[in-house]
Image (cartoon, rainbow, N blue to C red; front, side):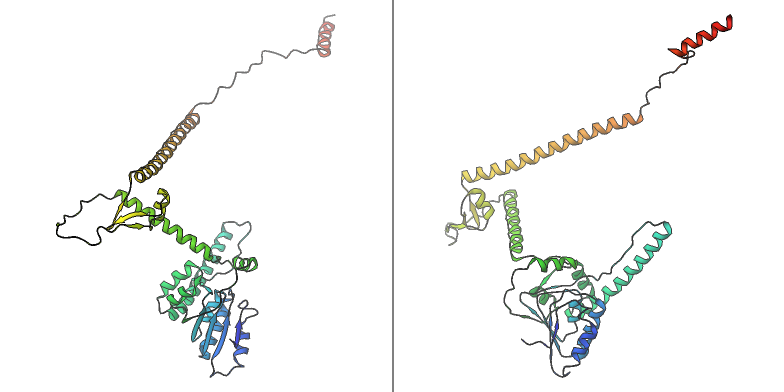
Length: 349
């Protein structure tokens, strides 16, 4: 497909509002303008300006490809129609601004820094409100709803963006190659989260399924068994005697080392050996929980004893200082002693 305008770099430079204006002026205002967008965003100011230029043109179709985020999604909101590639991603989030408060400060310096940060916060909240209003107008949703989406700051698939109402249609395209390390580095440098891979999504889905099946197993053993309703001998349910192999509960099947559990009329049949296996696993889990509880209680007791010893030492008196007495002149030894004795004898002669 031929595009009239490519926005595939940083918004602000080289994709500035002035650049887009100069390119739009070359086009016939009555004809459709096809815009290719694949950018991680940039300047909000330029994004808002370009959005208004698209709205003023009145016949712009934005085609979102690759990974488009931040102010690149803002400018797309000015298009008459937004189409997103099947394997593309979109991210909307709260606006941010660089803040630099560093160094030794006294109380007055800190107060001034708080005022500057508070003013920056107020400005960013105003900008977020305006941006959320643009998303809300396109999606036909409330501003509060779109602010919640911005708070999540997660990558949206084409299906999710269409469901939210941020785009009008999905463009079928070839699956992209695996993301390289350079692309990952650019995403992280912009402060964006890395999108989940298909493998990660499958792993998460499998984990949720295992949790669900364990919850059903727990409820199955906790539920009180109710008596089966009486049935006339003349009445017979055609499905009551049909025995099937239920393979839904994969975790239970793995525990019992079977492909499936026999089921008939909504009830499951377990053998004595299978019941023993489940009982052993539940007993093991209960014993492990009890053992951990005992260890925690022992540690709490030891902690209490140590704290009591610390408190006793802190409240006790210190050791007495030994009494020091000076019983007379220190004994002078050696040459000094002999000289002293000579001087005493000389005085007597």
